[in-house]
Length: 225
Image (cartoon, rainbow, N blue to C red; front, side, top):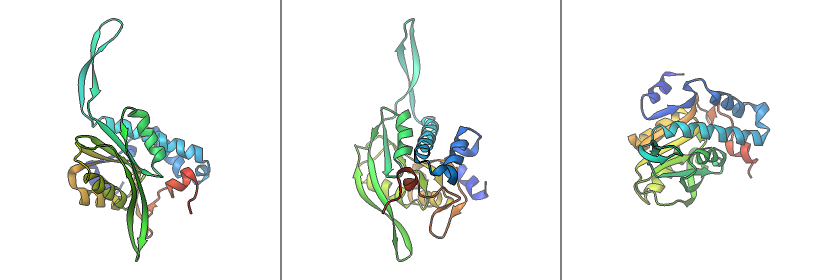
């Protein structure tokens, strides 16, 4: 891993592939062109990565000891006290989001529709749909499998911020580019926690992640017009 990526690790950034685990196997399969043709397997692997990353996010949440009655005695178990809201950026995030929802099955959900735009050689992001519950005092997890330029994530946070003040922001991706990480951190400051399964090398001239995996939405659901 290069020096830039290591620098990100010292701030509010977590990368799942820093240690060997089954996550690396799933990462290999979602990147592999010989496996990508199987859309069902691609979606399943993305969902698996979402569940694994959600487990890591759970370690950063707040807990409180609560009494539990067993058949034999009363015991106390540390339980999550954060009020979670999961917000996937459609459509690519839906399988990844399912992995988070598998773990945080009592969380509320919101949905954001966003797409990449190209204007005069400038790459930007547009939001065209937003449906979310109250975010006041909540722990918000925004889910997008590819953190490329970071503009969709930043605009999503900015748009949601107009509706309330959450307790904390967590931004989760399957694969991230250093440029996108830098843009998010510069735009949003230390207020956000970044989580990813892998930090890749760079963005190419078309602002796609290298080595990346291609278009996650197309691989999960088929090419769009």
